[in-house]
Amino acid sequence: MARIRDGRFASLRTKILWTALFFVCFMIGRNIPIPFLHQTAVGSGAVNTELLNAANVATGGNFFHPSVFSLGLGPWMGAAILWRFLFIGRIARGRKIPEETVNRARNTLMVILAIIQAISLMATYKIEHLTWGPFSEQANAQVLVVVILTAGAIVVAWLANQNQELGLGGITMFILYQIIITAMRNFETLSIAKSEYAHVLWPVIVACVCVVLVGIFAGNAELRLHVNKVSIDSGFTGVSYLPIKLNPAGASPLMYAVTLLALPQYVAHAAGAVIPSAAAGAERFLSAWGLSTPAGFTVYLVLLFGLTIFFGLFTIDPKETARRMKDSGEYFDHVAPGDATRRYLRGRVVLLSALSGAFMVIFTGLPLYFIGSYPNLQFVLQAPQTLMILLGLLWMLQEEIADTLIGKRYVFAYSAAAGRATA
Image 1: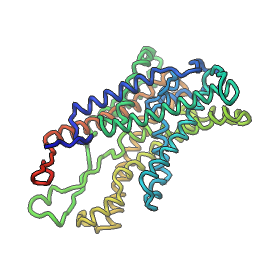
Image 2: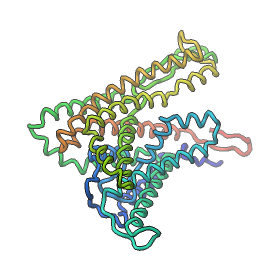
Image 3: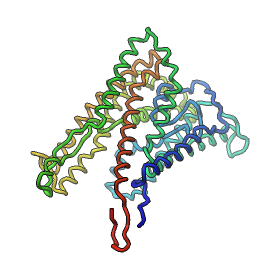
Image 4: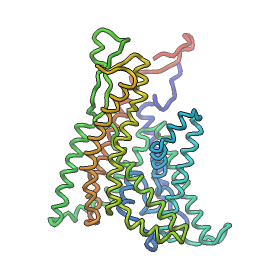
């Protein structure tokens, strides 16, 4: 008898060991300094720090302490959402392009975003000169720094994918690590919570309590749509249903909204560094783009609400679900199969996602309005958002652990004598 050696059927202990290995590699990379780069900001190239702080938490990166893995999962997440949001993946599937070609194109987009972010980070710090190379001494060092940062982003994406296949939590573990590190580094900011900030702190505390209560008690809450199956009779027909979570998108909109909001900042900053004539325009854009500016704050709230609906529809996929139900002879009460089922599902998902999006905007987005007036309270003002991400990731991790433990109850093997797989 030979046990199946597949990541999906591995034991919890095996997955934890794989995750520990990938996690150690990630921590080592985050502590490897970049040659020729000094951790001293130069000029006015220091972009909006409040947006970078939020992006660091959401992507597991660290722009303020440069290392080989400073870009974190930012390029990977940016490429993933742009690919989905622009419907490139849907068009590719409609044209029946091989999956390898689609993955190659998506990875190319990730590398492009990594180069842009690497140039943005490189332009923020002082760079030494490199005597050997095909360009000038300064350009040689800059190219090397960009190459190292881009390679680091590719390695982080590879570690996340490997952890998704073999380990536990996927990208969750890297983002959780950044959340914990950020909290430890900013814990001293809580000491400034004096009485003069009460009018700001109390709304934030109320928002945090609401986020925690909803995250704990409604984390697994779901709307169950009764499904009739023509292939099932007897008493089982009454317990057949399609579950839709009250928050179908989870914490993904928060992470991806910050990632998308930061992309124009990276592009403008990189353009200003590469094209001297565009530096003045880039500076004007950067001064008006961020969580503390009206334009950036408004765009962030719109992105947050829109991505909540987008990820809800992406998670459920009403069109594919309706097609599968029609092919298998399943239908909802008083709803015809086909397009009627698709519209019925889409309406339910959009309604739940809109309610979830409104909750996120009110309790995690609106507190950021005070960042411009109270920059020293940035960590506190981002607490509801960070708690929402933390609880969402912990729910995902808990569900994966539960699935792994359920899988331990079954032993998959292959019987050579019988010539068939048994469980």
